[in-house]
Length: 156
Ligand SMILES: [Zn+2]
Image (cartoon, rainbow, N blue to C red):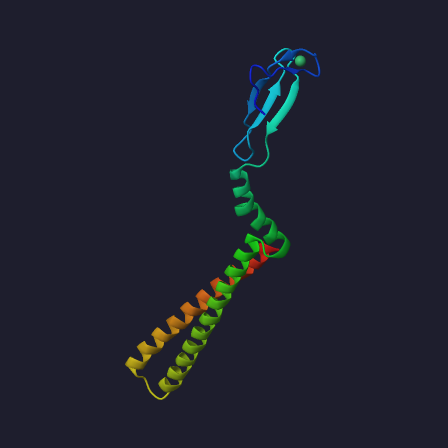
């Protein structure tokens, strides 16, 4: 609602006729500009136009607010998603390390049983290598298990 010089409006408060002063209120980019039509004599607000959610506001609502609300209402929160992912990765690591521990344990035992039949220096160095690999996998598996334990504790 724009006013021309000829359009005099009488103020509901002071009853004087005037061309209202337009006052632009620009709160933020998420809301449309509000134009207040003020009485130049007493400052009474005769009319207000504009306002409402702006294009940027709607953009933010559609991109961020709606997905957030739906995820809270119907799905997992980002924290839960992260937790599930970490837990899955750790569980997979532990399973694969478990296989390695098992494999190297068997190798060590089989080499040790062969060694009982005589002192073979080649076999001895081989069994040492297998033992250290076995220990390494046990240690890594333990580290992952502790991480998983901590993860579960933190999530509670
Ligand atoms: Zn007035």
